[in-house]
Length: 460
Figure 1 (tube, helix red, strand yellow):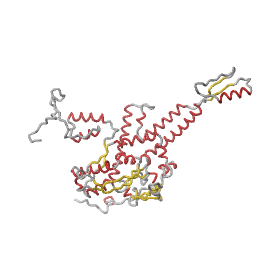
Figure 2 (cartoon, one colour):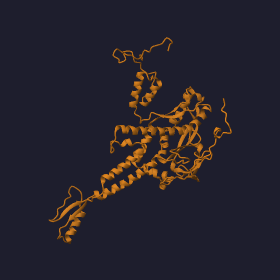
Figure 3 (cartoon, helix red, strand yellow):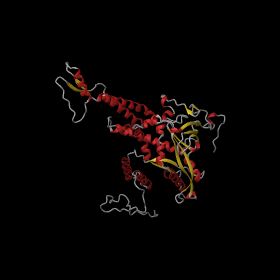
Figure 4 (cartoon, one colour):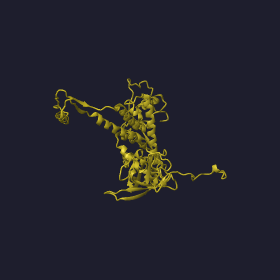
């Protein structure tokens, strides 16, 4: 029965168009960034073709770089796959075809590494190209041919080459195009390139309204990084001024000019080696003088605090427990749990951008429609087997549940277990059959014999 709408009731009508807006101030393609630190706004953060930005300067710091690796490395080591849109053989083939195009035909690790730069700069841009290529018709029989449209490249467009954002009038939260500044090199001409959104795949972290530059994870670590750099400079100055001793000679009261000249010669010739020695006349006193002042321990603690803040910024504060910070195992487990939740959020964000797109189109949908038609069910990119999860504790639970009958082992569970443990796929042709002997722990026949299965009367 169709839904009837009372056109006189405002809340019963369909709402195809929004009345509100994104609200951001974008003038001449430049976003009015309201960051409280004016030195970090816009290209001052991510740089331009003539100079690096603050973000790149921060990434030169080993602690900052490693803190970002806490996020990027587990995501790059995870298992990325496509979940079929249905249970039919066609749906399975479409998912396999998408896996082939994205994970086999492309250098997925390099693509993912560039995607995750949105954690540093706030956004990452790709220009996608596709063309007809030869594929395995035996693997993809529903194509009906050995030719298919595949993605030939996900070309990363560095953040520091972006010159202007062009806002979509249809949907202000989306980009209509970008203008890229090519400074020129041996392989490409200089100039400005306008690239429309239909070719772009954009990843923006924490986009608020039409702020396409986003708020990167690295931005909130700027204060800790700045403090660490300043404190390290102070520590080095202190080590130089207070750590190097000054040779000193105390002359007797009756010293004459010749004695003063001799003392100056002795002090200027002081060397630190195995033959260095000093014999002074009676009444002369020699010493190495060092300055005092400044708490070295307090300075080192402040530096360590800034390092802990860098780890805490990415949710990996538990990495410092037991080093300079005391903490219990339970506290580490709680913090690690929050860290894993954050990683799963990043994984969903990346997968959703491929599945749904960010500026009005989806690369997954375009790929499927070009090859399998408008009626084909779309698969969805998923991520699993995150290496941060402690599977050594989860797998025994699965074993216990299967022994008690709560979970019935099947081929799907076996494939999942093999995948988690990074074991090769099962091969039915070479699988060995085991029978229980009298000394086997299963000799009481609590479970059916693997090598001699029971056959029911209906033949199953």
